[in-house]
Image (cartoon, rainbow, N blue to C red; front, side, top):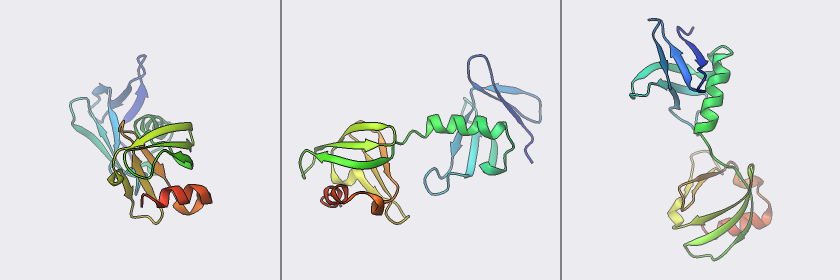
Length: 155
């Protein structure tokens, strides 16, 4: 059971009203484990960095508060998903990659091979571009053959 309310103010900020009745605008939901357990452990943090509430499971938060939190988290957790590698400029770094993502075509620069990180879940990769944008490969095994061949040169 949650003992707080959430709503958006006219400026679009998320407003948290706790059991004490004090409304705090501009709160930020933060996932504890955004990749390995996105539904578990969400902290609601004030603009001063103070934790206002801890949510063990996002799925246990009733609507409409859960919808507001998911909306806010989606904006915070921007991570394009790579669906296909179209081309790689060179097999040494730095290299420029042309990829198709769930958000459309993109170009990324891989500065060093260490910018490709394997995640504990089998076949998952995080690729950080030279601009700091993190791309996700959720399952290496579902990529097409040409994409796998290009990516294997860097793994």
